[in-house]
Length: 415
View 1 (cartoon, rainbow, N blue to C red):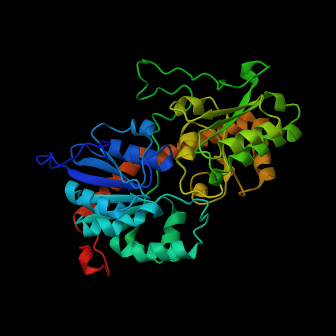
View 2: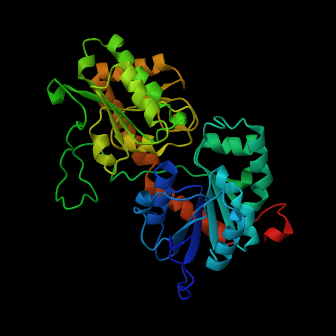
View 3: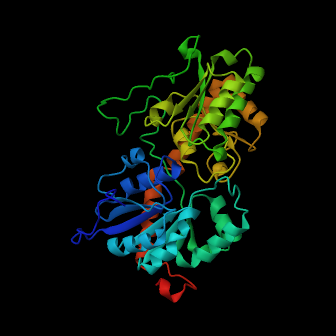
């Protein structure tokens, strides 16, 4: 751990409840954004926090978290990972452990044996190793470790159904809490921001232009973008190919079309190669990781997410809150967010033609995109605001900490 944290051992007078959040790695991503919003949103007079990384953390992203939230990397792969976790929990004595995704689920027995009296585990989505939860070994592993968990949180109805009927976890111990987004930060052009540093009045964000060589007047360009870690499960290569198909579907409009891909990751080379092979390097921007997402989203006309699997993607909520129509794969919890034909378009996963046709419909009819974007903004304000998510987690924490979430069939040593 080597100085990457500030210990709570000297906080004997601090009577606030300590929550230990356990993740595999702290890096740029949707899960980490939810963790950040949760830590910022929970009442500081009631809760304090620590973050445990089974592997390690990105020091750049760690800077977004408050300085008084210590981060403890365990460096999985070296000997004694679980022993170090047990010693850490015994020393810091958190009141509640909140682990996220399957890689962190195996930490729950360790937390119980370390004497942590309240334990919840959240499932946020899938990866390439198990796109639809069909992997029998992973289902069995969730079932086997479930007795050590007081409450399982599913971020979508799709995941909640999987935990109950796929992994065999009792329905009474599964809680559905939707992810939320800050609708003051992510907003359409022209809305007054709640936090804009140094700005007395909101000003419309400039159109998205960095890196895009546009021979025509800037106001004529139409921009489709995506945000996310560049990895196979997000399938950004397919978005590149679908965008290139617009050359055939919209030959007269194509010179004014632009593609923005925001994010970084292991598939960056593959995405760049796809851009070059498609012959669209003069109209595609591979932006890498950015800290100005609200402004970049306000510079787009349409948002696309061609993922092969998802939970409740935060980027879709951010795009909807920004007033953008969303074209996305009909997978996981996405249909719980995007209403096909009202706030966007849902297409089959891994279908380049369907993705291209959906993008073409919005590029051809900007008024349709504006109407669907406005409906998406209204939907997020009504059901997916970050404040509601924080309240739901605060209520769950209180329920578990007050002992009303009794376990059934838990090994005696877990209590």
